[in-house]
Image (cartoon, rainbow, N blue to C red; front, top):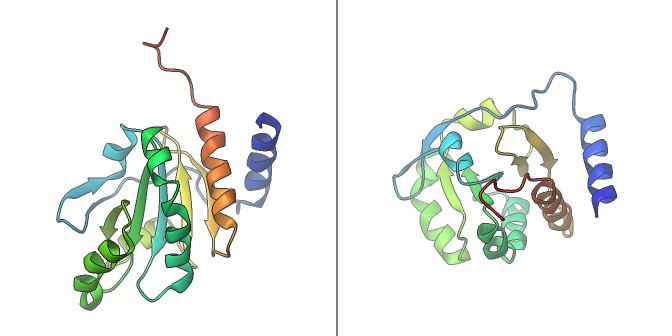
Length: 170
């Protein structure tokens, strides 16, 4: 699998626009329960998979539904799943009931003012990022079609495979 990881990383870096930064910016926004969430606090627990979505985006919902079956496994490996709702203020009351109806366990944060969408230069929906614990954006994916979740999962496995061992392990 190591060679496959190297190929994924090579393809990612040659397709990344030169003007784009590979460093993730911190943020501080509220989740659907009113808790303050920041990237820095999430990264203390492990890498972050972050996807931008909205209630009107059918492909966004399909992506998050497709990744739902992987959540428990990656959560146990320390990966944080973050779904960033870019719905406007008038739609915010619908977000929490919708998330509950889909049985998503992801951390859902609200970005009605497009703070994060602008910060991460999100141009299309859905757009997903994988961020390592050093704040490096190691994978970016725009759009969704069935099967794309396998590419996302493979990149998460590659990140975890290349993760340094804990110093306190024998």
